[in-house]
Image 1 (cartoon, rainbow, N blue to C red):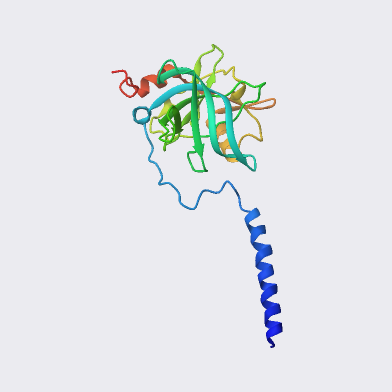
Image 2 (cartoon, rainbow, N blue to C red):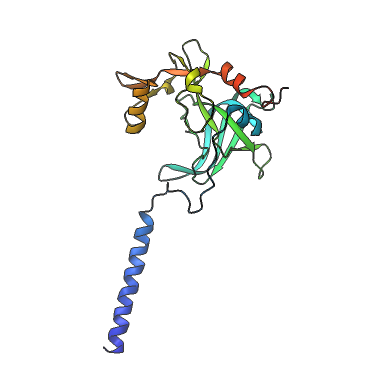
Length: 234
């Protein structure tokens, strides 16, 4: 084989590599976890979580300034309106929560439109070492979703998602009629596995246009489980 032929074959192989590599990169799933995963966190009680947190607050999503990749947030700050400052300066009106990257307990929030009321959350946060007055999520997770019932009372929605708790909250849950738009789910908003499991357990019931949550735990009970010492109120 001549040198000219060898050079031609080498050039062809190089061209294939150049063309294939970008295509492979484009098909990579941006939601895949980073190569180096954080160590898994152990289940935690509400009192332990509240004690470790620098801030515990009931808040409502107001706005978010996120960078998105394929419709998923990958970094930025959410702004939430403070409703009940359990462990926070009582004069705080808006709390900033920063997150970056993709990981198991990432702390991103749906960004409501100008026509929507934001979702409510019971937040467990740590101070952000990179910016004074800003917070980040806890390694164990940062938020429990809170709904409003027919009597205009706040309740943590069950089943619990986002934080692996040791408290047997399911045994304390009460049947509730929620008057909250976010108490409803559709076929598209739930995975088939979650939908089937939650229907079987009674956490959901079918409605004409989807499903609605059926049980919750009022925030008075949740605050009692966190305990006054964990909230800095000895």
